[in-house]
Length: 279
Image 1 (tube, rainbow, N blue to C red):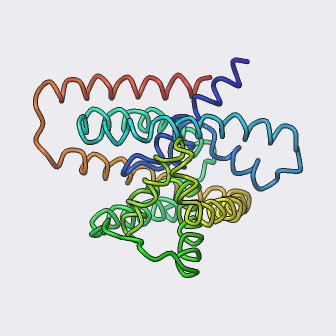
Image 2: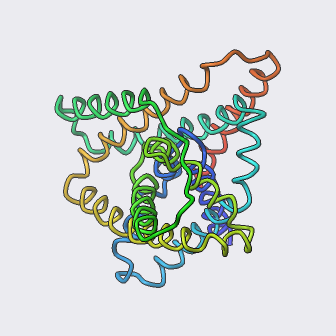
């Protein structure tokens, strides 16, 4: 029972991370020790059908709880308590980084090419953070092109869930769909609104489903055939995302109580991540 509860809690953290600006659900999955197992469970579902479904269900329950329960809370917290909220999640991410370093260290491959790959990925993600995001979009007339576009947006969003270090919210802002995607997510608990927007929700959900399967299989292939280089790339993604999050978080001036509260939450997040990783 304890193992199931831990999977649900980890799933909740991943789910919350997926809707936090600048945070990657895939990156949190890595730092919580769920990433590779999750990719393998989706890509090779029938190799251990009972075990894989059991794993995915409990992690999925945690993710759904977060998405449905916390999306509105997180939106409120980011507006009213931005610094403490972001520092909590930065702490969660940093708390799991040592385990990533340990995994890379076990490979014993410290060639310059691998470190060069880490540096290239780090720089690419860092430069991506400087792009101007467009968050203004209106959908007045829903037609076949709208359905296709939301199916494709679902695939893109799925990729941001699976590929570590890539923020789903950042990419959605980049392509101009952030507002409507957050609206869909935050209204999942409202049956009437979800039903009224079914023409948009369905193609998005289908794209999300097929996208997760396709990208998971791709990542599973990379982890099996190019494991060392994949993890060195992931390291670049994670380190760059942490730096970008710090820079984005401290763009503004904050009060002393806000900073103190944020530091406390940072260490709480760090210790939670370390504790979950041990378990």
